[in-house]
Length: 377
Image (cartoon, rainbow, N blue to C red):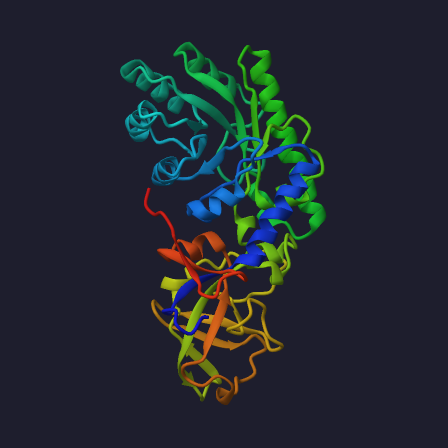
């Protein structure tokens, strides 16, 4: 089925993808907490529809372009989970006027003032979650900060909806052990619950307590006080997740199909037509994981590596350089020019962003199915 596909291109193992989706859904259902999937990884409606939790029907996006795309395809409970830029508030108002149910995020009183000003000018009643910083890795209010309540008061005085809090434990990606991720999940939850309780004590509704990252969602054991969990990369998984033991390498559903276009015989290496334009420059591996360069190579008819670990050790714009992880030379006779290989990505989101869509391999279909992705901001 792969012989007719253009290279480089993205390939999805449909069976593995559905198993990944089902695993996360089952885990969260056991804890009676809803999933609000982050669709920035897949950016595709057919995949998104299989990820949506029927208990909530909501989803998470990272760009207004994603919000437009999924709204146009019938998903209309969207959390725009990036701190809103004041320059985008007019565009948000226009979308809400068209009927889009869009929740915003902010983490500074100045942004709250910008939202309040836009509320007065547009008449649009914004719904806002206040972002909480639980690990010092990105953005957010400290849960005990005075600025959290200050921002909430600014919004409430402008008759905006202080709907609750959200937190993302990006620090979980830096963990070296499962126990570390479990502890990060505890801290993520307690930070969000504390912040929400402070808002409620101050008279704000704060009914939403939104937490999540794929590692903490996977290993979280207590979701008391949490209304929803956000996760997205679990749909495909990747080498970072495998390095964190969130998944096995054999669970990774996404790969880049490529073709051998040359041999570097003196170095014992292969040249393929997938460079960093196809794989991305993301080298973000888990701290305790082996360095697999720009990706781990698999045999063409399998999304699992062979006995000899081959990696993309170097990448130019359109050329990938493959070598043995051990440094021993590759036998070029095993991989003649024209051989097709698949490369598992370090970071599924970054690799997928390099492509306009996917070829879905489904056991029930004889031909790959093309699935387009949305793009832009």
